Length: 464
Image (cartoon, rainbow, N blue to C red; front, side, top):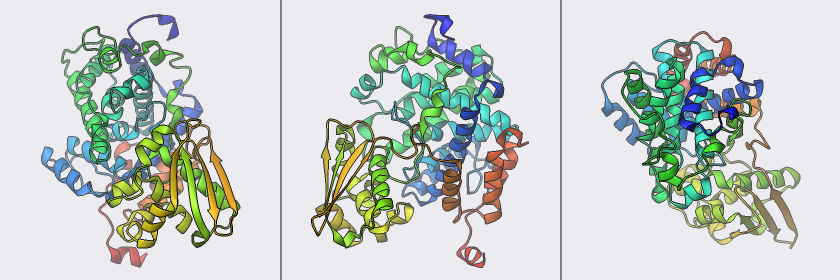
């Protein structure tokens, strides 16, 4: 692809996505895509514990009448309704993937429309795997061309802006688009690109993701009807993505080594709920607990240094309101880990985060500072005990990052943990098996049938 020189990146990416095949994917990329899919399903099943989930379900139900498309862990909806709702479920409790270079959550936009079309057309698992790879690669590649610091300085939020391109690529891959149809889909996706950090601190930042999934679905379905759209959206002189959103960007970065180096492999996963930029804090504290027996009652003070960006976004929630702010709070994450030796959604129930002991500890004993020497999710900390001893830890790469990846076993365990309250045990293991052998799994429709189950009653859970 690099031999294309200065050709328009929209067309080059469209050619790539339209032509991508299973054999083009390195084994590492294939396996990471399976991790991304299984992790997205785990997050979706956990999403029933989200505070806004019922509101999005009501919206999804109202969009169109129909029950042709499966909802992960719930009752079926229309094609557009299921895409929207599944996208929100994946991001509802703040523990889905992130492409750290662009601070963009990717699977909420890519996986739902791919599952919906794969199920509708009863396509094989191999096609789904390739489609997810195409969508993830297009999303992250377009993001690399944005010149992220300049993009972020203008207030843009990545998922609703670059996510629609990846969603369109995934659907276009499943529909066997040629390069021209794929480029039109990108033009239609770009015309729906939106989302800014004005929404930060509210659940609207999560809505950007599921709306991006729907935008990409609409773009691809309209392109399938030969709807006319620009095939040069990224670098158009008047209104192109790179000129309008980031003052020109770095278009060649989007296509550098395309097809030889897969950027999708750098999409990070999160083992624990809580915000992306405090995953390093979580990692460092768990590493510290693995080496030392620390009782929260013996902790006098915790001093945590984060990057300036992480501090600005998460250092101001010493006093938090509700689950969403607790998920964003560096103070609360530290308090929960030190008290419970764990960080799952069990730590983000009202009974836990509203516990006076936890609130007092987070507010009075946890100090968050900014450190100019740190970047991204990096973290340093000192845990000062009542006897004056100090225990220190430093995290360079948070667990789940490309440099410190989750194992398949860890992703599977995450799925089991959050599927347990929604799916029967036998289906949990069948879903894991289906994703592990996705390239030989015959039918996306069959996979969705395994996931298409109403939440178990308490009596059913007790009987098991």
